[in-house]
Length: 405
Ligand SMILES: *Cc1c(COP(=O)(O)O)cnc(C)c1O
Image 1: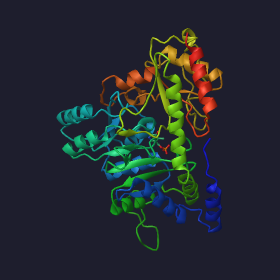
Image 2 (image 1 turned 120 degrees about the vertical axis):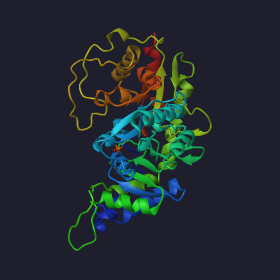
Image 3 (image 1 turned 90 degrees about the vertical axis):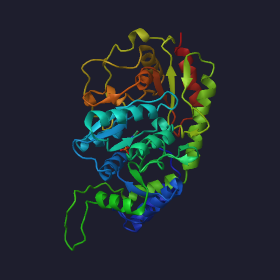
Image 4 (image 1 turned 90 degrees about the horizontal axis):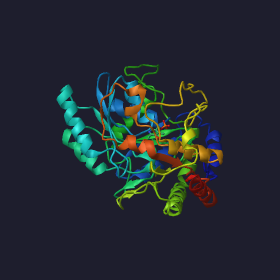
């Protein structure tokens, strides 16, 4: 459930009074200026209908088309990769490093060199991701990208307000992605934004996002456009949300720190935390890893049944699984912990399954070092949202301890 400042309703009512209920209006502009105050560095931000749309348009401006290759962090949510598929291009997956869980810069370097050797062409773009809000080694990733002259599109969808070396995530590359989906750090009910380096780029994005209209008294089209602009009503919600951003991030930090403190003495259970003071995660989700040596009640029955629905079950329409197993899944003790918590009314989730292990992308090249697969087998996301209280964190930790034999 999102956390509202109370100002959202005021902004929405004002938008309705001014008849600004279209993807155009004062709130979209004001929301974009709010976002630019956060990003700084002379960036221009364009508000869009989703983070996925933002990635799609960034790829188009990077010149990605059918047959091209785009490097994507494998350890991510499907939305980082899907727009590569929309364009008929091929994702090339690069694995993570163990500190931040994000793209490994050395492996990235080797992957690019190998793609050039194999295909004779450079990948068209690089998409690093800040998973669960944790910044990555973006300074080194930028060095590698600059060495080859390849643009970087930072997927900052989960890392709104996170910083690396004091600089906001999403402002290092040629483009940065933001998401305001219902479950993200702030929400506009649904929405996203693209961080652009300059006004000329932002103008190109706005043109593409509003059906690419030429200036004639009738509809004249020379370019393939999209209906990807954020509505003014959604932007009005975003303006209200921006007023509680700091409070919101402080809460997520507090929840993470409390989990870390309470789980400190539990052998084999580790809370994922900033690897060094250069990292400043927004701690969108607090995640833990459970060592395979930790014995959890019910591990023997962990995958006994096919579950109904799916993670984050969208509209509730999911394909029914044919078997409770896939070839790579969380360890039995991790699934047993998830079921144990679920029975106590606590929703936890496995870490995102890496893209190079998804049947959808089985034919895509992948440069792997085992890090994301290992994390997927041992990881769990804990309740971390704005409504989670200290008492609930204590209840979750108590329940985790009770599950361990
Ligand atoms: C949520 C998310 C997106 C997409 O954002 P939407 O606004 O839901 O389209 C992209 N990448 C990552 C890593 C995400 O978690």
